[in-house]
Image (cartoon, rainbow, N blue to C red; front, side, top):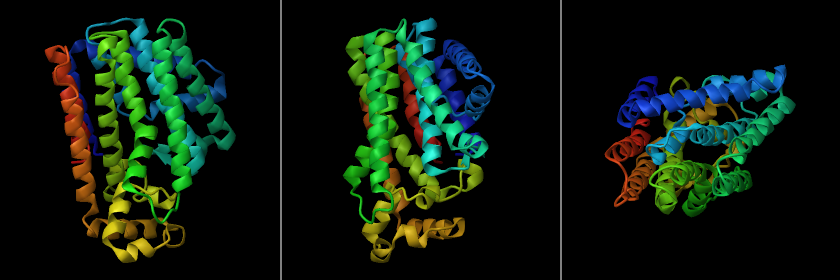
Length: 330
């Protein structure tokens, strides 16, 4: 995504969320920094590097937006827990993918090797649950635990599908729900459980998070095909190079018999080949169809907010999050 687009989207959400949202995100950032620096020099360096690579902090933002007016340390811990789990999965993913770049910066794997990256991911993972363990309550811990299990199942599905010549749209969406959307769901559920409108709205707000997560992942996969490195922070076609079968490729194969017959493992072995393969996918019109699917999920997300006892500020801010998922692609 472009820096300009990202900055404009974040500014819009922060404006809609009010000064409390900005203050709580700053408190969360401080808490994340404390965690990153508290486990010895080497682990601290790698954890701090992962933290400083940034990201939009969208998942912590969802915790606060779904919590409404509550403003205390328990909510900050929940927001930090969600982001720590997200960071842990990114570090572990980079080990599995042997990735050298993440958001335009060297990964922990590239900087410190497999052992350091594995240990860093494990540390972040364990600290995510310790953030919730003392004060958030069993329902909150259970919500994050379910998301963690889903992340692992989704990763196993992605590994099983690597380099496959046929992956159905249904299986792809199931994988996206497990690997991406369930953590968005958990963020929204945690906010509702710990704040207002309360546990009775946790399911509906969780559905909002699920739809947003699905749309987010599809747009991310579209960007992998359409976006240059300076826009995405990773090489164009990185998913193709590691054998990940995404929706644009699935749709392109449905439309182009020649593409369907090609084996990714044999024909995409360099950045140049990945770039050319991305051009072939784009020529089928698959990117437009994938985008339409993501837009459908954004509409479902907004519909999930209907009739909930949200404040006007909550409603506006969550709508802006949904719109921002689309605008990151523009």
